[in-house]
Length: 445
Image (cartoon, rainbow, N blue to C red; front, side, top):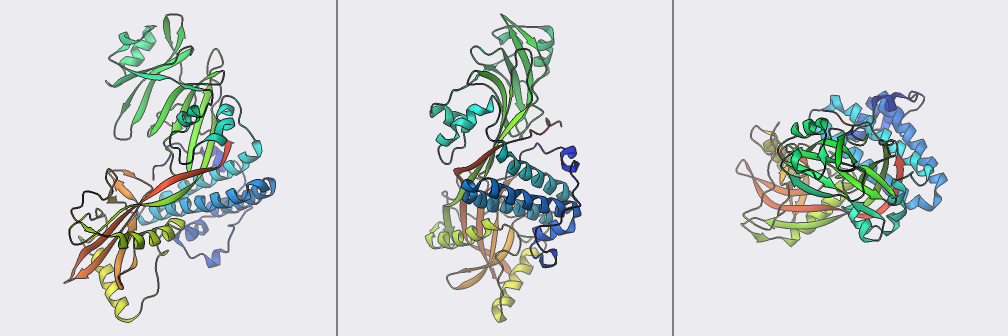
């Protein structure tokens, strides 16, 4: 669940009068955590009403895109629910209003952007090529280039210091490069009137840039383009799109969305930041499943886990997979939940388990297998037995992904023992929609 670290500005969020709108649904019947979060905030309720208006307008104005719009709206609502549940379950509810407001505002801007048609230069080159984009693409520019789009990307060359530049740097550029971290990289694109040397640091892969203008054999320090800030978990690029040279910022995206920003070189400096947002379908694919005892094959649990993951993916929040239990089944399940929440349990406050692998080397190879804080318990039926199910995203350190991990646990002799595990990949599918949107301001940390 990697999130774009750049958010809509407060000015955008507060520009329109929101109180004239109410939530798009009856708050008296709000049942899910995300619905209750919407209704608890007049600001979010108003944005929910505005989004409903924007969605109806999009359906009316683009009847040829009705199916794609409806599917994409379901994906967006699921992402909203996922975010809301992550903040609520992680004791971050106080921050949720601002986060959800940003989500809603960006969604409203995207739907409005459908009316704008093709984006301006240089992003028009990308928009024109999108019909040829292969399904599942996670490297948009290179994949479009392979399909014949007029896109050229700068080569990246490692260097030790400013003396390794193929140009003579001025004093300001020497100083800017000296202030970067040790791991230096320079971008080279034949014919480009500008470029930049950069360093990347930290586990968040944060970028620091030293941009420059090329004047014959000299390199002159310049201000950076508006699409580059102190960005993390994103890609800064120098590219030629059609006849235009541009600085670009392409986020790492998620299965449902990719953002591409560009600022065109005008001859003296950079033009305004432009952004194109791409929205995709996605699918769930079983990676692997294992059961106790050690390394036992478990295709049967893989099928069970996929059933639950598909349901949860549509509405990822607490309560989605709950069902009414009675008698001894309820007593046993409640006891398992209590043990999970007890100090040292798999769902105790501040604790999350790792997906049990039972010694297998084939489960989720190379993936994050620590549960995130939003992981949710539910009654899971496997081989006729009601077990404690646990579902959530993969997690390591401060990062979480979009995949789903499902495990089953049994209460035995007062302790929870792992019974089975499955890892489900969430993979990007075909392009559904694209639209130009207002670019956010550069991020500063």
